[in-house]
Length: 359
Image (cartoon, rainbow, N blue to C red; front, side, top):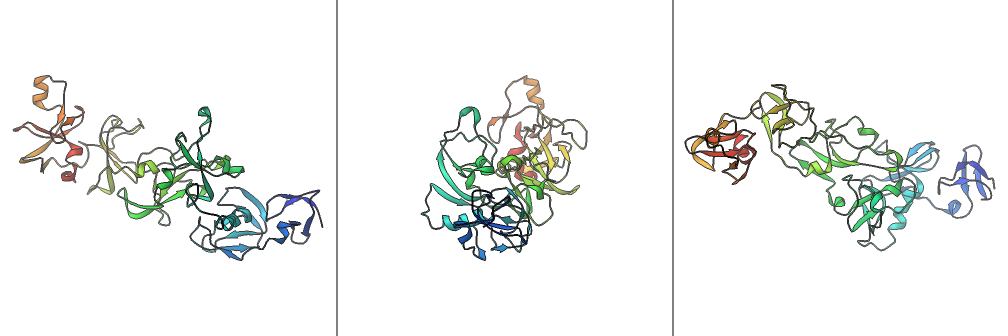
């Protein structure tokens, strides 16, 4: 029995130090605590709910970042890894925890979810209002009545999920990227080059360090460099093809927060306007500078063609009115945005209300 305070037992990941009796192999630098660690039988292969492929017990020393708890183990000898996915490793305690959990009764109070490698527990939110933890999916404070948490220490003490955020599907097909499916994925080193969400252009929060993590929908395996915030994945604003550009253009309402966006055609700012934006590159176009047709026919007004016109339209200027309505949806509209207009019938329609005909 050899105590050694410089090495960790690979089964429990605790240091082999006095007064704990330890078995050791000097040549391999392998040390095991006497008792349960030494007597633990490690399956040569397991199936973990967090990963679709089998995990195989590996005995080649290497540095491993556990995919379940996000902790590094340096020069570890025993761990589980995926033969198909080179980057995936899992330490012994996290890998075996799924086997222990499988023997317990499953209920809504404890679930296994593809977003985290440990069993999650449903707890009432007792956090101090001044120190509300952020949900790892939406990055918003967990202020609801119930949240799912990982009860383990270390990095996992910062793992919180809204119950509703755990209902996001693992894979989606989205009109913003119709070429390939998008997978809800932990944003980590492999995706650090994806700095912004392709839809909203806001930064991706990569809080992997210090126990935080973030998730986003990513096009995996196709080298598309396409990423969506989870909240942006629920936005279904229309997209169009444009013969003057190779990528899809997204129609955006006038709520862009980044005031540095300029129209690629006229070079003026577009943050106060509706616009077309390329989902793949930095192309932004005002509606009048972009690919909108000059004239359309629409079911809301099939008597005459509707013409793309600056707003306010002529009779609104003459009437000096301060109320502006869209005749298609019968709701108030922004008088600063272009419209489709029939002068003969004085019919005015917002672009977003006739967008099905525009594309």
